[in-house]
Length: 317
Image 1 (cartoon, rainbow, N blue to C red):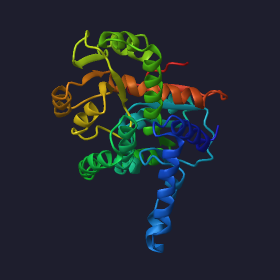
Image 2: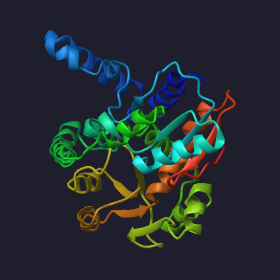
Image 3: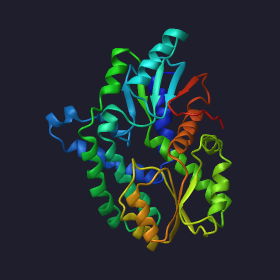
């Protein structure tokens, strides 16, 4: 399978699972096309035209000819210089390793990943927060994340892939969309009554069972096992943590429980203040679910060898 096709399958599946729905994604792509049309000739040259069809700035082909044939790929949650060197060593020992895939963004996708955070306004709106409030809340947080990323030497890993001539790509938000869709649908189907019921549901999922075996099981961090669940919000996509002011608005809109990948100390305090139950399902384990769902789609009609590394645990469905 060609590198371009692998990326396109992952991208399109992520779009299908986007919490905003097709209408929301199409609206974003339309705005991007309008912005591109308004640029002068000089600015158009530096515009990443891929994002006229790819709504996720944190995902893309980072290095390699899109027409390269891929029969084996090494997949990791985090890929750094060490994993690229590992891939080269494995290629030397095995005789073949055609592609490295990362979940967390690198290169230009890391530099611009704060742009995907604006989708959080639409997700909050879906759970009852007025869109004008959602947009106001996410704007400052996205700028804060942008400032945090600006000083990072974000090209290091891509530079290593170029030097060793190893094709390299990343799928971040598409995979996060998949885990959100998977878990939200599962929770709604199972209709848990109290918090401990959610823990039981999560621990039946292979990726979370594997995490539990490695001492990183899903855990209640706000509330207790006997607390009733209420409306559940699976909050795992949109780049990274949103504004800590979200919790007051979500509480008013009727959200009783949040299932997340991770949560900072300040965010936990705000959730507690607003009596919102919180379960941390697990960061790496949740990322595993999203990647596994995408890889199932990619390998559905292709004989592709997957080499797990860097926290990735392959589960086929």
